[in-house]
Image (tube, rainbow, N blue to C red):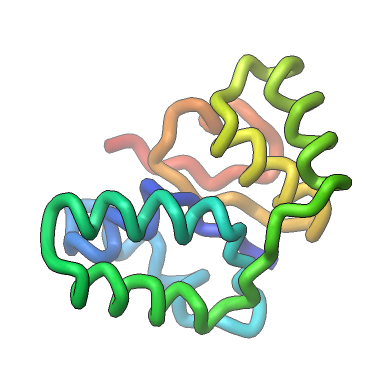
Length: 123
């Protein structure tokens, strides 16, 4: 199972230099978990930098994976992980979701760089 964090989705949608690094999990949508917080973050950035139609298209692509809502179990696990690893809220929710669903996180976000089960790509 895989999670692409917000930085990976944004890299892919903008066709950035590391876009190809995220192709493997993007093509395997049956094994793709999408924490709802990544939809929030990606929609917000695309809406700010482009159009609402582009933001809606980005979300439609993300919804090809299994969208996972934030629940109290994941929220409490995220709080503990945030304190343990000094992570911002969204990152800790992504990490907690990854641990809950036994996922590898694919990312460009340096906050995840030294954590287990992470495929980190330097910007």
